[in-house]
Every structure is written in structure tokens, then in C-alpha cells.
Amino acid sequence: MVQLSGITPSGHAQLGNYLGALRRWAADGGPDDLYFVSDLHAMTTAHNPARLRSLATEQLAVLVAAGVAPERLFVQSDLVRELGALTWVLECTCAYGEAARMIQFKEKSAARSTSVEGGGQAGVRLSLLTYPVLMAADILAVGADEVPVGEDQRQHVELARTLARRFNSTYGEVFVVPEATLPPAGARVRDLAEPTRKMSKSAENSAGVVFVLDEPDQIRRKVRRARTDGDSAPVYDPENRPGVSNLLDILAACAGGDPAQLADKYPSYGVLKDAVADAVIEELRPVRDGTLALLDDVGELERIRKAGAERATERSAHRVSAALRMVGAA
Ligand code: AQP
Image (cartoon, rainbow, N blue to C red; front, side, top):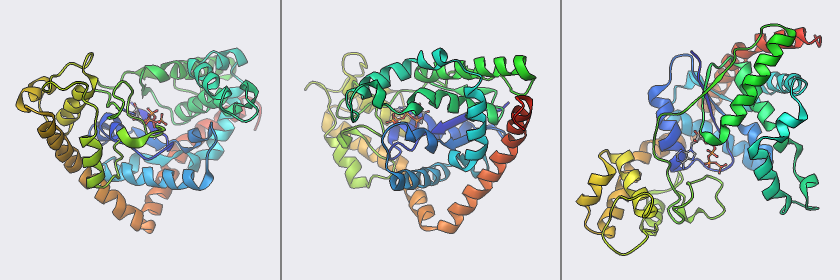
């Protein structure tokens, strides 16, 4: 059984990425599972090349420092030849209408068409339309059976299933037909300043985002300023009191315990916030220290990256060659 999961370097990794994904990948990963830094997916909107390169390196270091086994890791662009070729084959297997009806494309292109130069949908990058096909290539190249995704990415895994089936029946059996699985239940970490939204690495305002590499003082400041929706004592009520409930969820995720019971332990917001800040600082300390040490040890990080690229290429090259051969392109 092969599971595949990724993180996109669209910004610095944040507490939600760590608690909702990286920590789990480190604890639960099976021997054949693969985790990757999906840097090619961070290019569907205006991007800065130097920043993208440095964020991809940083995220690889964060993953290793978080405890994800280095032998299960790779950076997507290190497979660009295989993935580029397979994306083209899959684009030739996919109908325009199938890509255009992706909800994420409709939402993101509508939102961005008002902000891009020239205005209108014509100014939106074509890759916003085609990135689900690249995602299908990510999945199909390595032969993933399972892709744990949230509701927002489910439709893209469905597209990968459709393309795998269509390719197999048209040209011959090459691809494993993947399945979207639900990641184990875990609280979505919310933005500390705007708790109705999830915490995001690319949030416009980072006041409510705790980054994995934030210094302890920065974390404490952000937690102290967190919105707590009202001036009564802390209660756990995610629907009506999302701010304080988010803090209790974070405390439970970092220090253990049940969020509703933790509420009774902290009579005031001040004491609760101090406890949350302490717990987050301690949870992130080894990840931060390990990441900074790795970023200093360029040779070691390069070695991990190269070994990961070789292993991932080995696991995908034969499928990509077979697909090219079967469509008559090699
Ligand atoms: N707030 C969150 N709480 C719990 N889990 C989260 N994840 C992201 N935010 C939270 C999980 O982190 C993994 C990697 O995320 P991604 O890079 O694939 O993209 P994302 O989900 O869109 O994450 P961000 O931080 O919100 O990025 P941007 O700002 O670029 O959109 C995934 O497993 C995700 O569920």
C-alpha cells in the first residue's frame, strides 16, 4: 500500500501544517509511503523564483526535522522530467471540460481574474486550469493507492482516478487507480486573529499565523493577541466561540488532554494564553532547532534531497516510460 501526501511551498510552514499533517506523517507513515514538497504547484499564481527555491529547501528541512523519514521524501521539481512528460500524456487523456469544471479552478480563477494584470479570466495562468492534471501525474507516476486529502482536493483525486482508468482501458494497464481517503480526524487549526478562517501559510495578514520557524517571543506575542470572542471565562464551543475553542484545540494537540475539560482548568484568558504559548513553543522547539541546524548543513540537506530524488525517480520512471511507449511517443 502506497500513500502519497505533499506540502506546497506557497509560504513558510505554519502550525496547522505541522499539527494537521507533518506530525502525522512522521508518526504514521508506512514503509512505502511518500511525502513531497510540491514546489511546481506553487507556480500557478505570480511567484518569485528565488523565494520559491528557498521555501522548497526550507520545507524539506522542516519535514526532516519534524521526523518524517528522509528515505520517504522528495522534492517534486527533482522529478520534473518524468512529471512533465506524464502531465502531457495525461493532458492528452483529459477533456477540457473535465479540467474546467474543477471547483477550485472556478473559485480561484474567479477570485484572481479581478486582481491580475489586464483583468478578466484571460489573465489567469493556464496552469491554474491544468494543475489537477499535474497532481494526477504526481499520484499516478509513483503508483499511489491512497491519497489522503481534505474535501477541497477530493475532486482532483477523482480526476486522477478517471484518467488512470481511461488510460488503462484505451492504451493498456499502466496505472494503479488511486483512491481518495479522508485523513484521520483532527482539528483544523484556525487563524488566531480571524478564527473563522483556517490558519494558512499564504494568509495576507500573518498576525494570526504561527510559523514553525517563528522565534519563541513571536509565538508568545501572536498567542497573546489571539481573538477570544467575548470577555467571559474560557469555554469550549467551536461554533459560537471559535477563537477560544481554537486555543483549547491547539493546547490539547500540543500538550494532550481534552479541549472541553481543559477549559475548566483555566479560569482566565491570560492564564490560558500563557499555557498555549508555552505548549506551542515547546512543541515546535525541536522542529525549529532541527530545521535551522539542517539549513546550516547544506551538504547534509543536499545529500537527503539527492537520495530522495533518486528513489522517487526509480519508483516512477518505469511507469512513465511505459505510458509514453503505449501512446506511441517512444
Ligand atoms: N490550518 C490547518 N490545520 C490543519 N491542517 C492543515 N493543513 C494546512 N493548513 C492546515 C494541512 O497541511 C498539509 C499541507 O498543506 P498544503 O501545503 O497542501 O496546502 P494547504 O492545505 O492549502 O495549506 P495552507 O497552509 O493553507 O497553504 P496555502 O496558504 O498555500 O493555501 C495538508 O495536509 C493540509 O490539510
